[in-house]
Length: 103
Image (cartoon, rainbow, N blue to C red; front, side, top):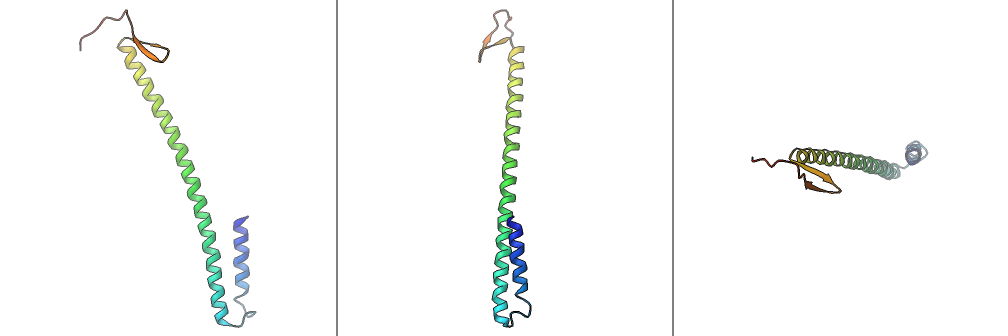
């Protein structure tokens, strides 16, 4: 809706560049008004684009972070399982049946 309003304002400005306004100085000032409307439209649309892009990048970063943490937890679990640790609640405890190895 905002873009349509800006286009309508631009078309109304263009009507003022015809013979309805006979003074060239006034048409010159109207040109600055038209440039201001177009610049404001461009600025608002750029802000929307950058905001949506930043939101999408933020969501991608969150998903990547969760996948990386999940993968690292799985690797730690497999390594500790090979070393003889069992998963109990949240902590890892040594397996009493595991023979101690020298590295």
